[in-house]
Amino acid sequence: MRTELNPSNGARIRAAYTEFLLTHPWEVFLTLTFDRRYFTPRYGISPEKADKDFRRLIRHINEQLEGPRWMSKSTHKGVIWARTQETHADGVLHYHACIYSPSTPIGRALVDELAEWWGRKIGSARVEVPRSVDDVARYLTKHMGDPERAEMDFSYNFLMRR
Image (cartoon, rainbow, N blue to C red):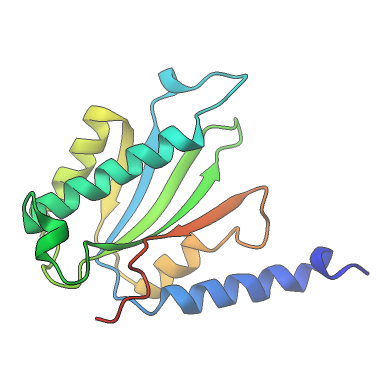
């Protein structure tokens, strides 16, 4: 039996990703979808455009927390995030992500504003303070080990010391 097709590999991959994610006390959990007017049956939503939109959201969060010169002000270089890219059954891309700010706590007002910001510019969003960091980590990794269903990405500062 080929090892990459062994179902137990998926469970090990999910467990490893979950453990990796639990290194941060996630403050915000997001589910981000893209407006279907940007979707075409032939091409779907460009992963590059989706990534650019997500990074605009991250920049917005950093500016709200640290001001316009956040990159030079903060020692940790912005919020830390992890993101899973998945597709709906109809092929439309969406993200699940978690965010943590090592220096300035992400307040409830900003959490509420993020859903409105994404909805006004890109699609729809569900933004919430997680009840359980363990549940968030498991949810983000539920399809890991199946590259056709999910991909995971991390902020460049994910491994920086707190």
